[in-house]
Image 1 (cartoon, rainbow over the protein chains, first blue to last red):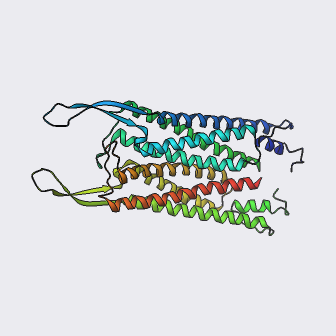
Image 2: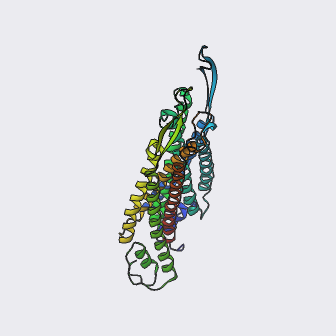
Image 3: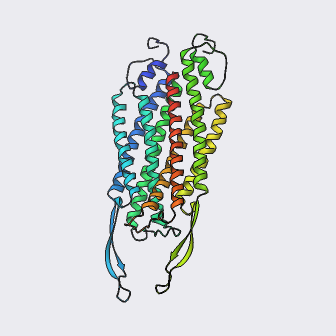
Length: 200
Length: 200
């Protein structure tokens, strides 16, 4: 297979595995070059977005002074109350998921730049597991964030976003960043599938 | 390509697309037959598990009589309280995700059995989107279920599982079923990637 000079197909395959070698000009090459550049851009984007999401939620903290009625015959006492990101286990899970995804995006980007051969299948598998991990983290943080935002009268869980407004905005920002990052990982798997589909 | 009788590779490809035709015996054929049978089994398993998860949570309801102190000088009054699955939006989301995944598993199983050609790429993409959907649903329901089970003192959300024990066990069962179903969808994407990887 490797000795077939006419194909153009095989040399592009080598390129996709990251080995740049002189090959005959062919419409497919540009196509595959585009796919490879696209993959690198997606990976870099996913890296930045998951990093930003982990940081935005991981430094989230707000302290507010709220009046609390301790004894009914006395005026309310001002008490400082804090909201911290690690108070809710779903937020901890979200930060851990995004940190793992970010670290993986970094190493897979390095691998893609170095162009190590034979790592395509492993990369698709790890991309897929990252998709599952990130969506689980997004789902968990969104569900808990929504309860904090709207409360739930059935189980008498009060909303907290009326007090901790900035804290909640920061949660929403982190969720948005992570969601876009997760979509980029989905696209990475799709690009890999399209690439494999075209190869054969 | 189709006229090559020696390959075995091309006839197995046709088989994988669902067209059964007599072909020479070859080690690869058994391999690919195994992959195809494996795919059908995975799809059927995912169908049953997501269906079971949607039903187990979708019929979840528990009514209990709890003593409530209305006036401090009077003995507590027994009040019936209910927990229903749709009281928490995360559980609604979970049931919807599993219902969608189940419906998709049904149609994709039909398609795989009929063996329509040229649907391989579309199937991988939809499998992948189902993975993302299911993990988001699992994450959301698990996060809210954990708060119901353990409560959270920081935001003063009380646990409810000490009252609604059967309800919570049913939530846990649904989560387990859906998680296994989600893993089967991950395996379906992996099988498709391995298949595409071998083909070229």
